[in-house]
Amino acid sequence: MTGACVLLCNNKKLLLQRRTDNGLWGLPGGSMEPGESLEEVAKRELFEETGLEAKSLEMFRVFSGKDLYYKYPHGDEVYNVVSAYVCSDFEGALKEDGVEV
Image (tube, rainbow, N blue to C red; front, side):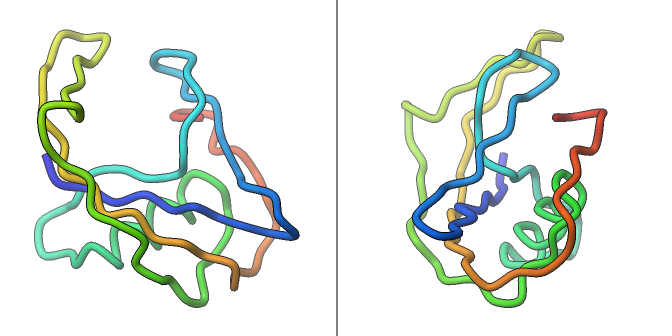
């Protein structure tokens, strides 16, 4: 499964969010939709999950391999390929989506 996440940094702080499906802390992010670029995934997921709009993103690293195996609470199993981006230039008001986080 291909996706992207955002390391949103502000004044030496990193934004984490608690997932509703498993209760774990993580970064804003999610899966690619048909026709999206990885940067578009990162920006869309950041906005959907936090209400914040990324003005610029910097590629951090691509993560893949056996360590990125994940079993969803409903039973689906995937190996993720995740592009991580750093964002320190953003705008908007922080709000949780109430569904995923």
